[in-house]
Amino acid sequence: MNKSLPPAVNATGLTVTRGPRTVLRGLDFTVPRGQITGLLGPSGCGKSTLMRAVVGTQAKVAGTLTVLDHPAGHPTLRSRVGYVTQAPSVYLDLTIRQNLAYFASVLLPGRPAATHRRTEVDRVLTDVDLDSHADALAGNLSGGQLSRVSLAVALLGTPELLVLDEPTVGLDPVLRRDLWNLFHDLAARGATILVSSHVMDEAEHCHRLLLMREGELLADDSPDALRERTATPTVEEAFLHLVDAANNEANDKANDKANEANTARPTTH
Ligand SMILES: Nc1ncnc2c1ncn2[C@@H]1O[C@H](COP(=O)(O)OP(=O)(O)OP(=O)(O)O)[C@@H](O)[C@H]1O
Picture 1 (spheres, rainbow, N blue to C red):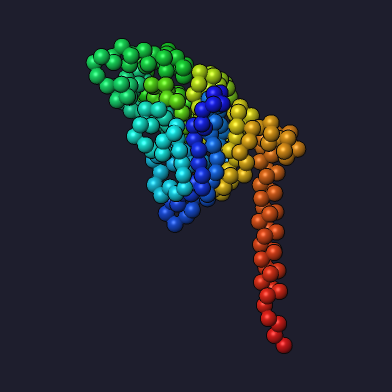
Picture 2 (picture 1 turned 30 degrees about the vertical axis):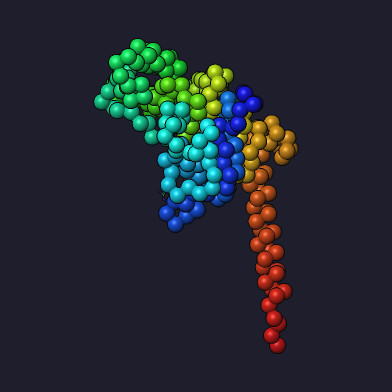
């Protein structure tokens, strides 16, 4: 990690409303460069919304959100940020190589870039270990293979920041291990990775963690520091400890309010 560089993502008071609901509530966090930051929390806590805000596809975002020194969603970030959504975004009637060639031509257009495009396609095929399936029709692939094609698309052009929304969901343990190895390899090559998961054991693979619950951040720390701070042996237990602490605090506040209201009420005889 290059400590002299500012964080890849810097959020202050990040608030997002979706329909009538406030889905993210005034979040402050950073995503350091060259590291894997895990965004963890239960289903529906707002992980995808936070990622959509970072890549600039989310409406009704308030607060300050800077990505690679630009406001989130700035046009110059398009080729510098790779985003993998939960739903694989590939054309099922094309082969893997044709899909990658198509997306490479969007990213690196024109005849002079033809050799560069081919090199890029070969490189990302190797990265996600799909060389031997390159000419298979995407429509005939398994779910795990399809999500690896989506990841390969995001790796085209070597983006500085990779935003990966639950990339290991539905994968068998071997593929999950291989993907985490790839994420570490990419980080070692200088990429910054923001990756979400609702599986707490994946937290152990991350350099830093953002633990979320109901649109709020419970912690922004390294797995070691979290375990130490909460005196728990696993990140999962640390998370539960923090949830209990937050619930107790909320209950105490509610009780204090109720007590205040009772003492302020005039007594009637
Ligand atoms: N289009 C929408 N309109 C209103 N509310 C929405 C919309 N999309 C999502 N939400 C709500 O926003 C909250 C956060 O959703 P989000 O998809 O960000 O959660 P998540 O943590 O990524 O969940 P999962 O792990 O299941 O993908 C949820 O309570 C969800 O119901």
